[in-house]
Length: 116
Length: 110
Image (cartoon, rainbow over all chains, first blue to last red; front, side, top):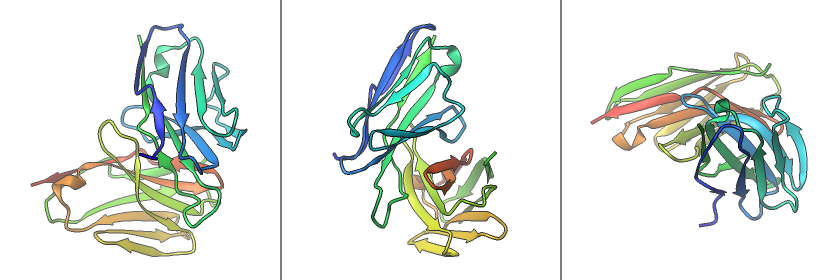
């Protein structure tokens, strides 16, 4: 399977703990996106990378959130001092820069975070 | 700020009937409009998309229309089947930023 993968699929943590999620995009895709999805809502944009450069961050991404893509391949999203309001599905997507489907984003299965 | 409104939030149809979902967007810079289907426990999957220089696109039982002047776009599913039951999201993309609608939960009754 050469799709987008995310790890872990589920994470339960206690309030105040730090968590880190990983996303492996489709190998030839230069663009990588993180989204947050709460129950009954569409995905909300968090941040965007082109290769290793983080080009945009949403206002939703407070200073407790940090994302990296050190070698332009996989990406990590870390949440420090988690709060109950951080409970959500965190989705990763990737897309190519060129080609006929350069806008199309391919989503991973998501990491469901529950903060107790 | 940018916004995408999606209606209805829930839609129930009989198998074989058509389903229509409508969206409006606010950002004039949006030029790409994808539709995603999300099943329980999975990430969204693209089912059809349309670019701003096209008014209509069809792929088998699925069609999408775009009215750039009115900033409206719609998804049409004909001959619905039980396996079409899922949550559908419209989205509007300008540059690298994509704004999603809140979703429509479609139930197809056999």
